[in-house]
Structure formats: C-alpha cells, structure tokens
Image (cartoon, rainbow, N blue to C red; front, side):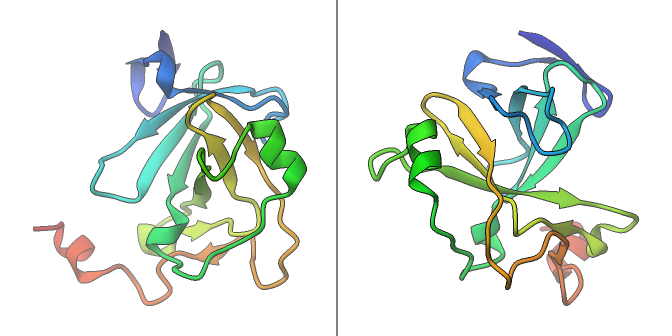
Length: 152
C-alpha cells in the first residue's frame, strides 16, 4: 500500500505495518488507520503515520528503554478487545513531543499506545496513575553523550 507523509514522502508499507485504531486516538477520533514505521532496530524510537492524513505522524518511544519501573495494569476489557494474552503480549509505546531541541523531548506516560502485533489492532489507553504525567521529560539530565557526539 502506498501512503503519503509530509515527513517521509511517499511510502510503500506492508500489510503487517498497518494498525487499526477503532476509536481513533484522543484528539484525532477520525484517524483510525496508521502505519507503524520502525526507525532503526537499535533505537527505542519509531513512528506512527496516518494512512489518510499526510501531516499526522507521531514519534513513538519504547517506555522500557527509559523507564525501567514503568508499569500499569491493562483493563481486562481492553485486553479482551485487543485480543491480548500472556501468549500474545502487547507492544507498548509512548507518544513523544518535540518542541525545539531534542534534549527537551517529553513523553506521555499517562496515555500509552497499546498494540497487538498479531491482529494489528491498537488503542491509546488513559491510565489512572497520579505519578505519571502527559509531559514527562525523556532526558531529564540532558542528552546522553553518545547522542551529542553523533554515536559511534
């Protein structure tokens, strides 16, 4: 399938990259189909591109690469709706916001994206955890030195 992105240009995406969000994503209720675009297998970053709206791309972050103690209990109704189980665990991502410098990037700990990689269904889940925020700084101590130097 070909989709258009203002960030990436024309993309040829495989069927297994497409995810359906039956309820859309809060703030974007009409957007129900997205392409999951891994950035690089060596990084915790990826993208979620709308298949309809070229201007809608989310930067995703693997929460467990940055927050070792990040956890939540997924509501049984959501787990059932997405057909998740111990044999089919969810893929979990945080939506990142970059305003200005990458060092100031924030993530939404309070509303992770939960995806089923088998049936390619997804949902943004709103948590009831007072210790999490919608604007948590990803790099509280600044960028790691490797990132500042440009890697290896």
